[in-house]
Length: 278
Ligand SMILES: Nc1nc2c(ncn2[C@@H]2O[C@H](COP(=O)(O)OP(=O)(O)O)[C@@H](O)[C@H]2O)c(=O)[nH]1
Ligand SMILES: [Mg+2]
Image (tube, rainbow, N blue to C red; front, side, top):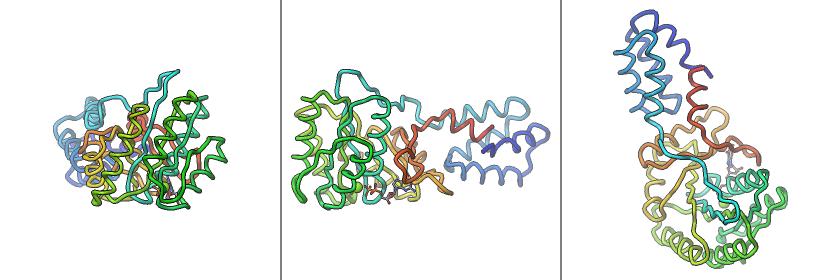
């Protein structure tokens, strides 16, 4: 990308003009950094100059991102359970399949659970992915209790020594409290068998500010441990994910970059910043 490079060389030579600062602020905002961080960086550019500027800006951007670990810790010999949640159509099922494929390719034994029982098509969708990637999918009848299917999946994963259990849930509007309660029930029932280690909220990278509100309500019903931002391909940059990370203190863990099974990668802040600067 190297979006910032030309600005730095300009700013190191002479004092930034109002027009340059406006232009740089626009580029910062378009780079997913959010208005607050953009303004902080602009403030730095006003104050610092010369050779310290670039490292000061890097430090500023870094400090605006989540500081803790982003990796999902896996312990060999013990089951790690991931619950995938979010509103409709954000990419939960696709992301569940992508993660299953990613971990399988790392040699892990993975089991998927199709807990979206509202629509038969949703179960079929996950089964199709499962067949393609060679990962088993636990499912039940249409309209059956998702918590019961999750219980079956968890019991199976535990007794057959799976490394990972990935549960795909139905999309729900964060404003419907009965559906939000159902997620709480899924959690309680699974945790009779095995702890849920990660609850990943799937955020559509093309949604605006409403994404933050969605994540907030979800986090009140089930404690979220991370975000997956999807559809960050083409011209979408998924800035809302970093804004959500900042406003909720929940780390962005994965980025979905397409409809293909391999189109997912862990979010790495250093690469992200290096791409902006290089
Ligand atoms: N371009 C793109 N499309 C995606 C991505 N993730 C999911 N989709 C598409 O978004 C649509 C909804 O995905 P799905 O996984 O069914 O969403 P769910 O309702 O949350 O389970 C499907 O057409 C997916 O192929 C992504 O990272 N990039
Ligand atoms: Mg789905």
